[in-house]
Image (tube, rainbow, N blue to C red; front, side, top):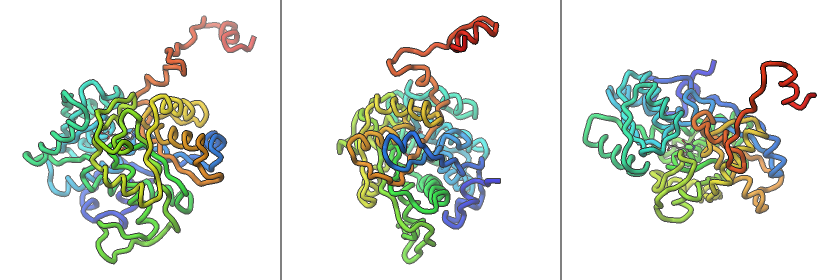
Length: 364
Ligand SMILES: Cc1ncc(COP(=O)(O)O)c(/C=C/C(=O)C(=O)O)c1O
């Protein structure tokens, strides 16, 4: 039985997150081969399916560590700004910890599935008149001025928990891949993966302290390929932007982990590029229709970027590639009901008799 990332990787996490473990047995998610993507790119592609976490996104990895640390400090209340998945996760883990959870979300820009999760878990949900970046500024000020702990990915305990995904990839493959692709919004996840890959390759990261080189499992580290939505690509453009994309999870104009993301890109010999909403939706459909994995649009940004680079001849033949898909499709199911031409897909209606059904299925 998988016991959650704090227990499974205790020797690679700071001691203070293990004093009072708050867990929903997060982590241990599938790493599935994706032949359809391998054929399209000429590489050997696996997909890390993070929608299979307890609240349906990768955020649970960082929430178990952040909430456990808060519980150990005797916190009674937590706050987060969120485009949706962080709030869903914070609400669930706060429930486990018996804490009050305040969430600040951009007014009208949160997917229904995530909204219902935060409400279901009893979070105090405030729709802020502004975008995610405005919500994060307010959440940080709230945590400074009041007895409320901030659980956004500016909290280093979030990064500690999220780095375990890199450990799982190496444990599953036997070594690090050549390339790791993923979406980039607030840039906590690309930061966390790069930290995890370095530590698993025996490289001490700043938080380890001098000389405390971790035990190596991997023989190498991958190139990190991060992808932003074209309408929300501050790192690509080199300045904050007023974000606009249908991929509301990554509709972020001023990422909190901006410099760390650039460090991951540069130190790993990787890239951070932009993909259009159309490319994101096309990748979203390929994942559903050809790989069998249902994700919310933002989750497909890494696949969109990989396909785009393959079209430009930038994916080395036979390269071992892992792409993280970050959130389950049920978070934002409306997109699956919209065909490639943008028209809504309506289910066929038939009479309750076998002849009508056989006819509708073209078996007649
Ligand atoms: C499905 C999905 N895919 C990718 C990202 C980007 O990860 P980061 O680059 O670490 O921010 C998010 C982020 C969501 C929030 O930031 C939030 O929930 O507040 C996401 O939900």
